[in-house]
Image (cartoon, rainbow, N blue to C red; front, top):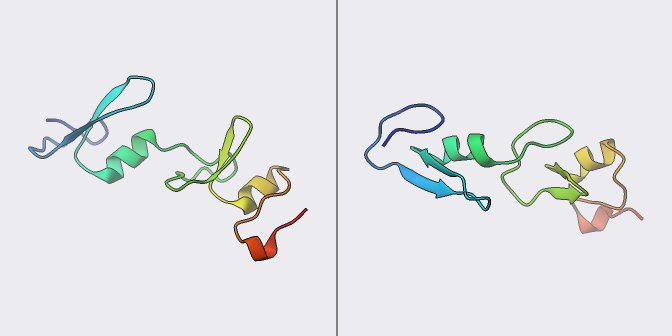
Length: 82
């Protein structure tokens, strides 16, 4: 099967179906992340962990969320802000 992202024809490729019903074929998790993971609304990196969601925006970390004006978020409970 041929990877949706890189075009590699790989016998051990896998199919991923998204929540909205789209299907993609990938030869690696790297390609799956590139295609499907959301991008941080501040820095643009792919959010492959839980991230922080504020309204419709997703951020990779509290720092990026704070830089965009999101308050009361912290990556570390010991450094939480009010």
